[in-house]
Length: 104
Image (cartoon, rainbow, N blue to C red; front, side):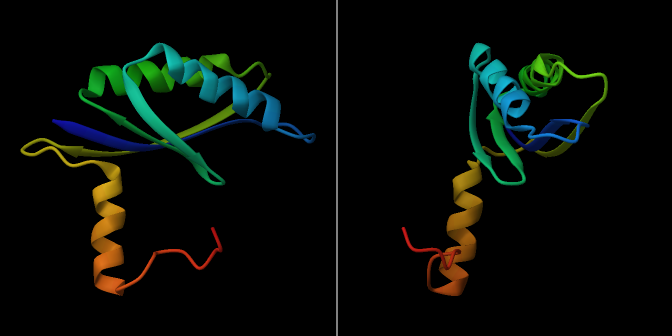
């Protein structure tokens, strides 16, 4: 099984959230997940929902604030394994180009 999720964890504060978001991302290192952070959240891949939920909770708990907002969107492929990157590749194949217009 492959579980792919989009996790967004942020303190509800006026100043920069970068330090606390970094704490949340760093907490993922203790779990058997792969992840990639982007401007809107962090894409996480895990073999089980148990591992995914544990990692998401650790990220949530790592943020030191009076109020924390966490959003978790899960795509649980129960009958086949597929990596998150394969989803992007499928879109790029349909486009016939990269799925970004940024210079790399």
